[in-house]
Length: 189
Image 1 (cartoon, rainbow, N blue to C red):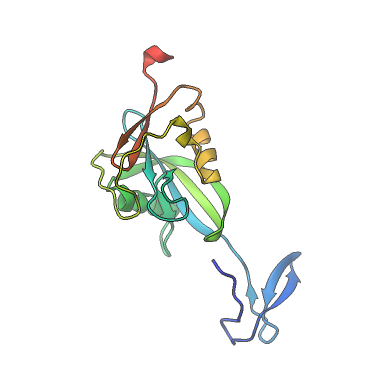
Image 2 (cartoon, rainbow, N blue to C red):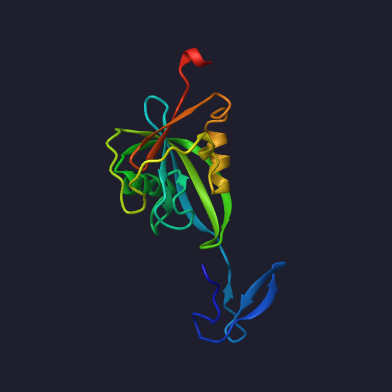
């Protein structure tokens, strides 16, 4: 998000100022202050009844062609958990139910600036996946290293929501642009 240059109240050019011990942009005419606040996003750490984790391959920047958890911006008048389930539905046509809050993470994005990511553990109600324009429609044979996401908060989220994923030998399967992380069989433990 680009910072304001002019005051949205009186159109005066904003000037740098130190307020509350932070650098801000201030309108010298009316006193309006531009607070550069983070944008809220919701992330769905979605599993099916077999414990498989849903990842999508992104069709747009940021992180074009990279694997990520479903998620996106929370809309005005929307609760974070509602935004999480809406984004999951929009990107995959999967309905789910919130199991728990995994965590809240800060992330700097070159495209959007400061973000606050609110991540939920979600149980998929079904597995009838139908991806939209936000995901690529092709297969991949990426190695297990795809668990290391281009989004730093996603990597932390994967470790927190499923702390032993890589150590436990999770394997990865593909279906269109949707990728699932399968837990190892009992014999592999």
